[in-house]
Length: 332
Image (cartoon, rainbow, N blue to C red; front, side, top):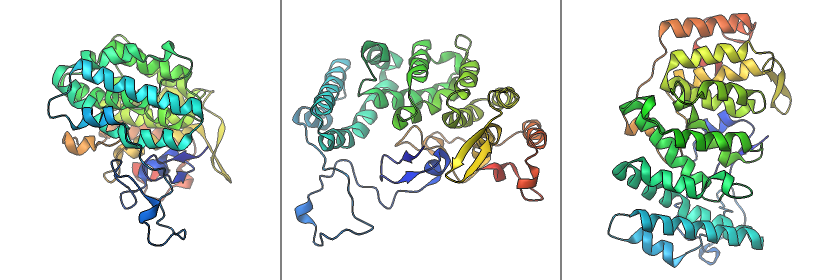
């Protein structure tokens, strides 16, 4: 299963490679309208941007350029416009228009909704979760990735400042509903589930058990959820890692690359390796360097590292690692 970068369009055979790649050199502003008539050399090259032109929608432009802060009503209207325009483009089969609208407005709408949620609290976001709940339509509403992104951002902020119990149940249940309905090919929506791991240990939602359940059918997206869980509470996360690795459902081979297979246990061990790395952080939620913005640092505690090393020995994986291997050597 390939995974495409929403910013540069490059495809990767694993989510880890997608997470680690740097597309800053090829990123084009989503507010930029690409006009092929302005291109001096029409011949294809490695730098050619094949993404569709950005589509301009007057009502959304006016909303985004407004000098006053967004209100619940204006946000609801903007989301409704975005949803209806994408629905219309989807029904007409005009993929370039669909991508042009999405690329032109999604990032900006995420920023505005996130700012409003920080200013007004979870209520303004929860109203939109009700309006665009997965159970309200056949298939996921087009605004789903926007809502997931803002949920993920505020999961992280809330967990770090107020504790896990302050994360609203409705927001966790929204992501849980998506988790139970998502398909393997819905990459962007799957990515939006990764911050679900920040809900581990919630008193009202059994997040760890649900991530464990997810591993039985969606092992590839379980590892990123688990990595986020390590940032949230590494002791609960390593408890979950041990339970999953000792589960027979996970003890099967999966295709890692086209010509390589690994065990599900080996795949899951990429999660603590990613968390232990000082060089790379998850790119979800997109468009936000949350670790820099929040001044977040992470280091595996000695007892957690010992338990991970024990799992590696149990699985007979040491022969595939350097002689004096570190947890980060488990990165795939």
